[in-house]
Length: 396
Image (cartoon, rainbow, N blue to C red; front, top):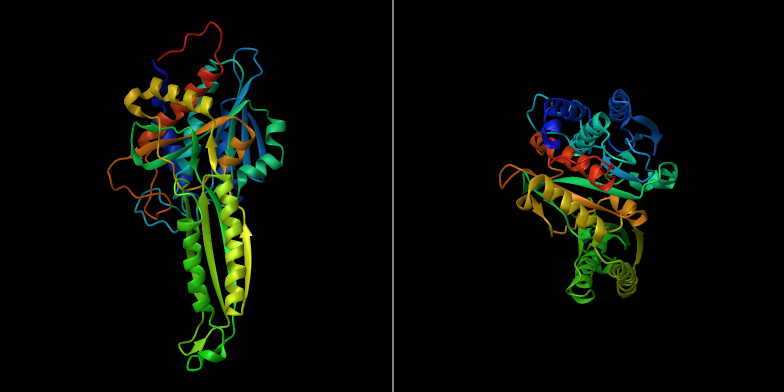
């Protein structure tokens, strides 16, 4: 029996776990029920369990059959999103205003599936560290775990991550050396103008007009300040001002997300946004308050580990199942913090059934349970290949 066949043998169990987690979504740092479910499963398979890391994080430690001390960390995110689910499913979310709209229920289940297989076989020499991380969706749970000393308590020679992709077909896993996901910063801009009657605009300072110039200036940073071959994007996603049809408001508020792959470009944009706010404030005779929050860094895959991951994928899915130079994305992911601390690689696992599946963070998104054995097999084979057991011949 192959590794995939053995894991597929408990596919129904994994589907049940995933749908159970899906029904009870919990958002960042509130994943208590999810954490308890994970801990219970790990303990039932004889895996050493540690809880309460970054409040609701769980770590499982499993020793192989050899005496080796090398260890790899496999990480899955466990949190949901504050979105009302619109799917009509027997296992739809039972929590108002929350749902697993990004597939973290599936990520958690695939890692649990790998943990079950590895606990049953232990055909590796070293330590498999299963990291179930809270608060990926904006909470930076990976960094919190690291700040609390996860890698000091549970040393890992490398770390590995995975995310589902509704745009890739089932049976495909994408790898990419170098930058795969962008950094994500947030600029919050308050324009402090001077209110007046709409019929006498000359008596005031219109913050909407100032905001219009500011919006244009932000876009010019990308088109005229950054290198054309260095991807970057600034998106103004909020613009709020005024509450009456005949009154020029006192203030306006804009928020913008800034994304890029290159740390130097990231710094350049931050400097230009600050200069732009100062210059426009001076030109219009108003005050502009800027709060610039540095978010997740760019996710940079290490070359040797990415090549290794590709080899594991080819072994499992064949050459046609590997997208070795997968598309980079301006999305962000806090696994980037772990890759700054440890060598490793992050892959995307395809789950598309059609060319028009609902995307991540959509209220009708749903994780595709058909890929659960594929993802679990990838994790398990990664451990067996990274920590080979002397005298054990790895089965196909």
